[in-house]
Image (cartoon, rainbow, N blue to C red; front, top):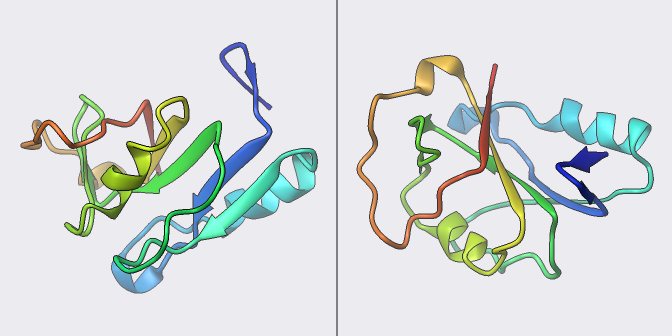
Length: 121
């Protein structure tokens, strides 16, 4: 699996929660395990009290409740992902969202980390 010229070895993806209206990540996890067995996939929770995943990741999938074309996202409001993504500056950050969640412009602050790409379903 390639993103740009970089070979991906470590991917982090969140365990989606239907009760929060998040995009189901299980098909992506299943596909990675089947089609890309050389990639280490870490599946984690993003609860406000959860510790940050250990290691450096080349790709990080991020839950998105709302987003704009600048790559800014609306999450649950706790700032967990922004704090963790700040420790992963080289990671390619992919948001997973529903098409109806796009807005023209989300307010953002200097500590908000924009995503590289948002996949909509």
